[in-house]
Length: 450
Image 1 (cartoon, rainbow, N blue to C red):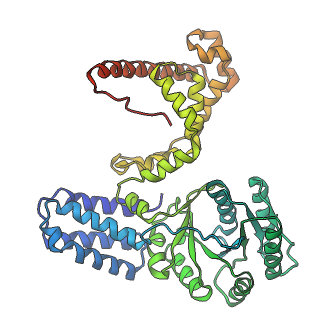
Image 2: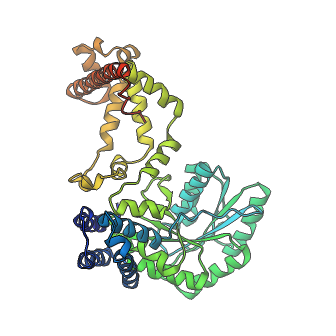
Image 3: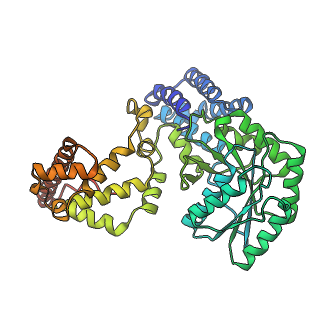
C-alpha cells in the first residue's frame, strides 16, 4: 500500500510525543523536523510540505495545546486534521446532471490506466449508485484502445459506443450523447486519447470535445507511481483544460504517496477516486479523513464496514451467527463464510485497515496466499453432502478420495478437519461461557461472523 514509508516515519515520531505529560516548544520543533523529512522523502511537493509544517507548528505551540492535560494527543489530533485538510477535507462527490445524461470526460497521458479506469468507474456507478452508464471509445489513435474498451464492456456486460478509428473524436462524442439520450443512459463516460506528454495537438482536441459536450466532470487519470511528475501533469492539464477532479491509479503499488498529498494543494482540485488494484471493482471514492487515519496508524474501519455492508448477505450473516451460538456450524457453512470473506478483497489489504495494524511486526511484508483459500474450498467441495454435515464419518479411504478429487494431499485434508473441529470446540466453550454469564447478567457473544 502507498504511504508505508511515510506512515512508519510519522507513527514513530508521533509515538515519542503521544504519552508526554508536558510538551515544550522544543519538542514540537523536533517533531516538525521529523514530519518535514518524512513528507519530503514521500515525494511530497516542497511548497506543500513547507505550508503544512507551518500550519501544524502554529497550532501545536498554541496555549490550549501546551497547557492541556494531554498535549501529545492534542498534537496528533492537529496533525490528523491538517493532513485531512491537505487532501481536501472531505470526500468530493461525483456530479449528477439535472438533465441526464451526466457527461464525464476521462483525460490523461498514455499509460496512466485511463481506459481501464473508465471501465472501473462505470462498474462503480452501476454497482454502488445504481446508474446506467454508456462507455464511449473516443481514443482513435492508440492501437487497440477501442478493442480494449469493448473487451471491458463485454466483461462488465455494459454497452460501448464506437464508430471505429476513422471518425473524429468530437463526432464520436456528439453521436454518443444522442445515443445515450435515446437509450436512457444516465451517465456517459468518454475515454479520450492520451499522449506520452502534454502537447498542443492533444489539448486542442480535448478542448474541442469539452466545447461540444459541456461535460459535468473532467476527470484526470494520473499514475500515483510517477510521484512528483503526476503533480506536474495535473497542474498542466488543469491550467489548459480546467479539470474537475483527479483519479489516482496504482495507489496500491510501491508508491511513496507524495502525489496524493500534493495534487489537491497544488491544483485545488479534489481527488475523486483511487485505484487500488487490477480487478474491475478495485476503484474507491477517495476519503481524505480516512486516508489521514491510515497514514497515522489509526486504521480505516469505515471503509472496512462499507466493504462488508455492500458485499455481505445480511440474512446469511444472522443465520451463521445463530449456528455459531448453537455450535451447529457445518463445513458447508464454513465454505459459504470463505466465499463472503473473499468478496471483501485481498486479505492483506483488509488487515491493514484495522486500527493498530501498524504495530503488528512484519504486517507490511505479510503475503497472504489467496490460493490457500482456494485449496480449502476444493477440499470441501470434494466431500459428499453427508461428509460435510458429519465430518466424524471420515475414514482413511474417504480422506484419500477427497484428496484425489481436490488435487490436494491427505495431510491437508487432515489439517482442515482438525482446524474445523478446534473451531467448533471453541464455539461450544464460548456458548457455555455465554449461558453462565447470562445468569449473572454479564458476558456478550464477542464476535459476529462476516
